[in-house]
Image 1: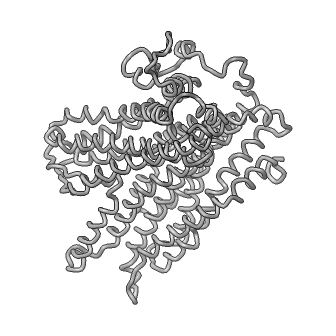
Image 2 (image 1 turned 180 degrees about the vertical axis):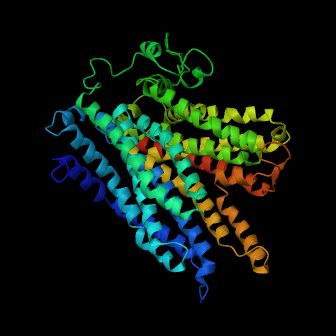
Image 3 (image 1 turned 60 degrees about the vertical axis):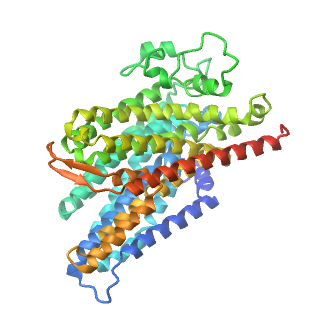
Length: 554
């Protein structure tokens, strides 16, 4: 019952791989990768292998870095709800009462969740093989890259399985999984690109050290997960479905959230000791006091501690040692919000459908607008405050005189983070209204954000990497055309932050540096994003009101 006759594995594989969504995702993924190779492939009738080797190496690096990023984003969405989904569907105890061993359950859930992702990654092998005739890349380097990539996918899946067994809700498991995977993603990309010129060393590390670390770490987390299933501490509620926050605060280790003190009260309001006033939105009050914090504050404390642990070294390097690269720290803040915002608002409406309480909610005297803004504000409040903890180093950076002289770009960075965080939450809530399942709403939200924010940057750097030499006339013309491609990312806060003009830096260990930037693109980002946010809000209200009228309320 461990592999071939594992009913959990067979059921999960059938439900995951036979859906139209699986085939559509496979088609889009393969077309996107084929387009990358087609764009970067040399157009010359005769190819000099000695000259094209560097281009082939850049193409392979770009190819595998992109797949590594996609795997890190998709693995939690497939795996983080493997066990928490059973808890939310009230089938967790039935699964534990079956004759299946804990390791069989863990193995079946993990393989089924990662099977689709492994098929996607493996399906790209024939496409990347087209780069071999260009020279500069051997078959052994390609196979080593796939070994490292598959090992990382196993590690990502093990992290998500561990988080899924530890929390009671998929949203909590998802956001903690992303926070744990994010530093691994950053370290992996930096190491891969840093060793680009040392092919033998990168080949050795990718085929030996990386798989060893990933397999041992993954097996350790899976063993802990199997033990939690063998001796489950969370079976049978006995009134413990809602955590006693006072007892949790006394027993908490590390960061303790004081709900009656600032700034903790911003996202964790104190317990209500009186009746609600007539002007209070009951939906917002319920979301803040019951939905978000009925399972305790462990998830919030972990997210704050882990994100700050990663932010401190990035702040030291990008804001003080190398201040001309301050936009990269803003990119880290934006990536964190992109991962966190859909978690808190992506299930605002779809969760009501899953619990079959939407019709009950619609038959109350609460208007549709009150329901929507109450749920939106409750979710956005938490994600915005968590993001603001990472934005606080931007204020500390003004202690650096070089950044103090660039006060306008720093204010623009903060404004970009605020506008992007609002748009991310509004988009996730719109998807929650549009789809019936929370998993589908969050998956589509991440795909849309990835297409809007990262795809234009990938296209820009892809063309930039394969432009001719700047010393030639054709090279200068090509660079001008590539620079115009920046405007493809007019809806991307990452592109807007990178395009913000930055004055000359004359202090700091990182040395001097400046950035011309493009103010029209930055202003265009604010116009496009604010207009898109307003349109999404209007469409959300229309969809929800239409649903309201169909129930007979109108």
